[in-house]
Amino acid sequence: MLAEICASAVAAAVLAGGTGGAGEYTMRADARFAPSPHHAAAKAVTYDRRLVPASSWIEVRQHTAGHGGTTVKLRATGLRPGHEYGAHVHRKPCGADPDAAGGHYQYRPSTDPADANPDNEVWLGFTADEHGAGWAVARHDWGFRRGEASSVVIHDKPGTKGVRVACFTVPFGWLD
Image 1 (tube, helix red, strand yellow):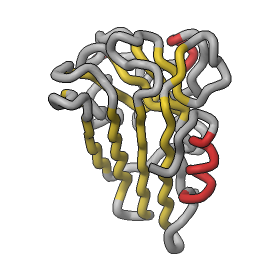
Image 2 (spheres, helix red, strand yellow):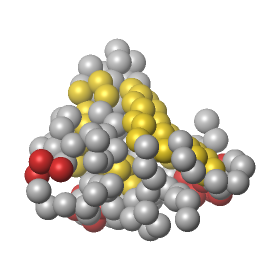
Image 3 (cartoon, rainbow, N blue to C red):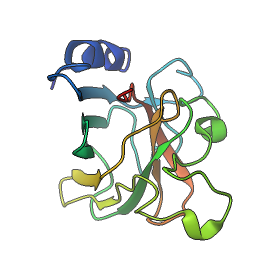
Image 4 (cartoon, rainbow, N blue to C red):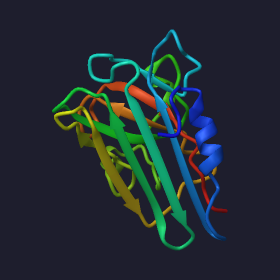
């Protein structure tokens, strides 16, 4: 694990971000969740400590290749064992208010509820194992637009209707 505290998420991304050859972007960021609103400046905040306890850990990796699309990976530990979580890339950074992260990032922006789906968005739902660890991978043949993907929000259930229980501000990248 590269980082032990919330503030290290940006440092981890700086160390790993932007690596790769021409037409490629690779990023890794990790952090421990801090209770909100007491740590509003934290890069990873929990809004529900029953499901995402303070000091539980998250890692997000992104690899984007020019014509090969984008892969986003999520790993988390210290969560409620056996619980099924939803997780999505969101448009804005985290804040003390769970709604600060805005809506889901969409490849084809839309207000039609039918466009909130795993093909048009980055869905990273998972079930925490008996030790509270979970992981997910999403692959798409498209990449993020500049400045429009800023966080991963964990929801209390899979799909699109879950309550926001935690958020991690992530320095996602894009290829111009």
